[in-house]
Image (cartoon, rainbow, N blue to C red; front, side, top):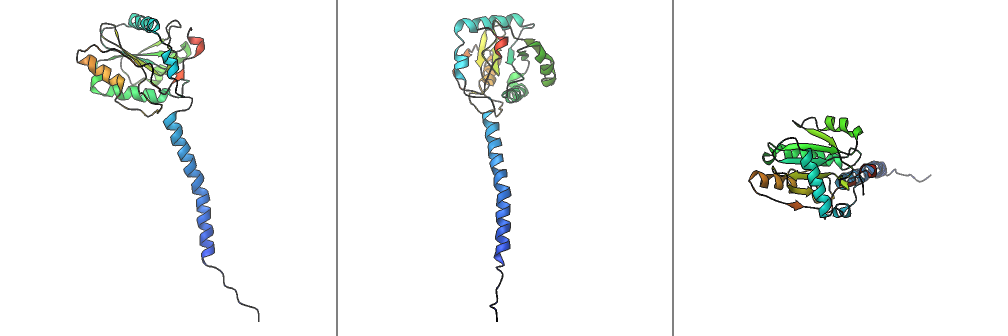
Length: 212
């Protein structure tokens, strides 16, 4: 008589577990990569050297240009925005959160873009901001990198120049040096913060739209 064999009832169960793992592990890996991509931002290496190249003369020239372009008195927040930069979406979220906070009330906003072709995109992208002014950067005073924020006092002096957040993370927040500077100006103080050495989520400003 042939020996009797018994099927292992656990084997199908183990195969199902292995099949489930084969499906779940790639999903987990993809999620981890997506989270890292969101945190670091594509095309956003630590470019502190780009802003460090701004010496006092170039900062003064940029300040004069921004003050010249102002059409009203009051606190003026200038947002340098390049739609081709992968960091721009996070900086836009920063800007909207800052404007939703109390210290930013009655602050005038200007968005500076690298070329004429970006004007319409900026108007659509920032359409929720009342009284928005959009202008093309002057090649003589364009910054070396963006996203970048500049805050001018009601008298036209430069109160802040630098990134929205001193971190390579692209996660938006309502606090940070820009919000602190706006609050100081609302209190009647006279801050001057040149935040040019921090590592941040930056892209180089298009070479064809700035002069070295």
